[in-house]
Image (cartoon, rainbow, N blue to C red; front, side, top):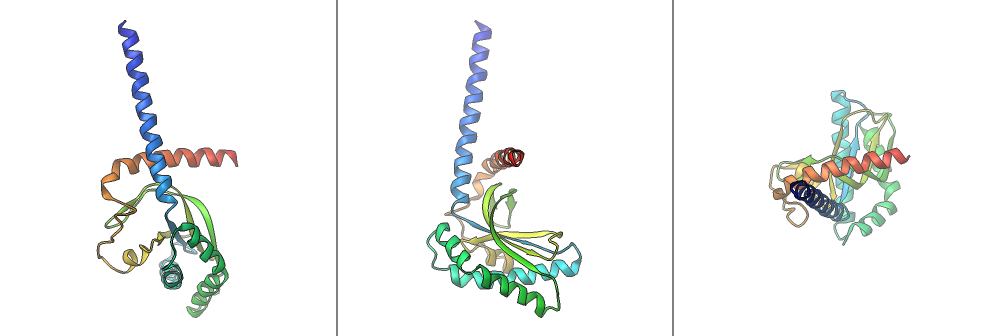
Length: 195
């Protein structure tokens, strides 16, 4: 009888863990579906290339802010960015040239895995997000990422003010973020095994 109770307790614990993990995964997916991440990758890790990366980042943000300000959701954001992709690539390339750089720049929208990212006033859980990728030159350097939609990057990049992101992100979910990170890593591992 004792063994039966132990088995039932273990099965119930496993069921609760899986239910909790599924709920966290659904919440992360809902959050991811409301965001467009920005992922700028430097040519290399030299101080010069890292500085260039930040200048290109600022140019991309300056371009994106007015064209996305009236977007209602991520689907509309994706449409707007796709329609303006060539102009965005041209602006990033011209920025490099104006700095005397002869490196190329590649810009694309891509669904990719992001680890948990902690900013000054909010965190984003790990998981798959749609990202606007800006790759400078070889793309072998440290990257910089944030959220283009809703527009949280400018606040993070240019000020120390609190970001009002309560509708999308709250601090109180740090345990869920760790769970989401673990689930995201497993999901990413399984997806990479398939390819």
